[in-house]
Image (cartoon, rainbow, N blue to C red; front, side, top):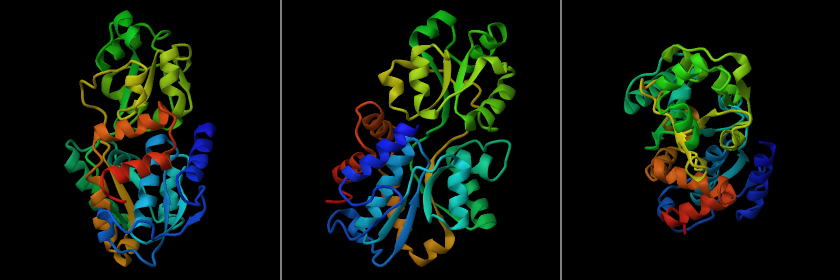
Length: 319
C-alpha cells in the first residue's frame, strides 16, 4: 500500500499539473468540453479520497473536473481508511470525497442492516446524513463496487465452492483450507466478515484469517500461499486479469455500494454548480467503465492522474 501511495504521488507529477498530493493546483484548465458549462471561478476547494486505486482515480477525476470549471483545488487524496477520510470531511479539513452508500449507511451512520435496492439505499443514506450531519450526497454513479469473496479458478473445482453458502459449509468442515485474506476494515465491519459469518452461519477461526494490505489481496489469493480466499471489490480489474472467481452472494448479504460525491452542505450552497458537475461525472461511471479504469492502474501500470485525464478527454468532459 505504501508503494501504491508512492505511485499515486509520482503519478500526480506526471499527470499534467503541479499538484503532487497535498499541494495546491490552480484552476481554469480546460476552456472546452462539457464541464465548461459549470462556473466555479474563484472557488478554493479541497478534494480527499481513500487510499485504494478506485478512490485515487475518482479523486483525480474530481480534481481535474473542478479545475476545468475554474476552481483552485488542493489535493488531499490517499487518506488511509474510511473513518479517517470521513473525519476529514466532517471536520472541514476536506470539502468533498467519493463515498459508497453501503459504507455510509452501516459504517458512518451506524445501522446494522442494509436497505434492499440500490436507489432505496442511496435515498435513505442521503436523507439521513444531510439531516444529521449536513453532508450532501450528490448524484451517485451507476456502478456497484460491492464487497465480494474471490478465489482462484482452480480452487473452485478443487474445493467445490461457487457460492458463499458453499464457502460457509466448506469453512465449517475444512477450517485449515478455508483461509481468508482481508483488510482491517473488512475483518471488523458489520458489512464485512462479522456480518457475513452471521448471515451465512459460519465462523472462521482467527488462525485461518490473515490481515493483509488491501492492495495485495488479489495477488495473495492468486498465489494461494497466505490464503485460498479473500476480500475483493467487485470493480477490481485484477479479478479477470488473475483468473479469479467471485463467489456468488446467494443470500444477497452484501449491501449496494454506489459511489457518490459527498460534500459539506455549506459548500454546495456556496457553489451550486457542484451538483451539476457531479451529476455529469457520475453519469459516465458505470461498473464496466470503472473496472477498466482500475485495470489501467493495477494491471497496466498507468498512473491515476493519467487515467483520469484520458477518461475525461475521451468522454468529452474536457478538451
